[in-house]
Image 1: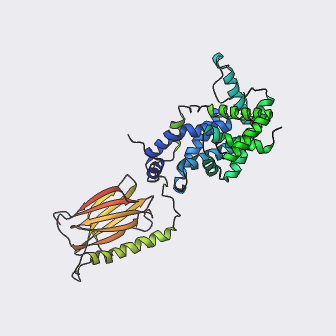
Image 2: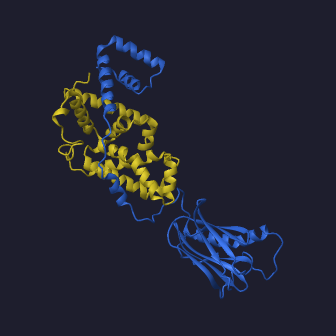
Image 3: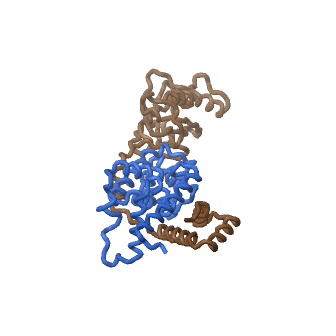
Length: 181
Length: 227
């Protein structure tokens, strides 16, 4: 079966084809969930945000402007919903107990794994606007142009925030005595 | 401490955005200053670690939860455009139905007898329903009827849809099109279009419903053979 491109599926959704929307869910549930997970560091919250994101996409398909990339529009909703969820959190809630992954087994204590966890913790220490650029650049592997589309910021601002975020991460990890070499 | 200028160059290097001059400038600094080299190595390694973090699998129930939470089947899904006010649709329907008569008359050639009401609005009084088809499912719902008005035929369309519906009408080998029906969900009453010629027993009228140029339904209305 040929995979239809996003614009075809979106058009079919706009014509009332729910199967087309299901295909969009299948295609994007993983990246949308991961955007939310990297922003929130909590699987249950990320799932809630992913679900809300898709429902908003469905409800607002009539307003979708095809001049924009569909996934940019959807990721923008996911980022905004994640920021809303962060804003609703009580201070310090969510960073501890309910971690992004299942509890570490004995075979996951390797040095690389510890570094990864330290980096994820450091990302969570960033302000949300800096965390969002790290998420889009390093977890979603998007270009400056795509990030600017999603965040609705000038590319120059996106680049500046990314540089600040990386530098803060480096400093945080050095303070935590994480060996980056 | 590494000056901001070189921090920016290192980050641009990570993103593959250095030009030749900047690359040379950074290379000179790296050779001259071990601290800058250390910062560069740390930032490169940090970004490698960030890039290596893999996608987590979403919970298995996510897709089902999303699909279950969708609103019922009929949702307002229309193409992106600024919606004109409802009165404009009503005016459009009235205008198109009226204009249909003119177009049809022009296309079909020599003028009919004055008694032949071709493509004009049917007379208001006393139409007799000859055949009716209900459209109970799909993007277009409602009812279409073939009716006798005096000595002629007309089609009454009561349609509802979430987007404007165009209708192709084929009768006695002639085709004409009505644009922009169905948006008013019955608030404007049925649209009635007169067909040319007298009532012919067994005559079929084919209707094809289109949304955004795509066929979304068909219906066939027939004059009973005993009429």
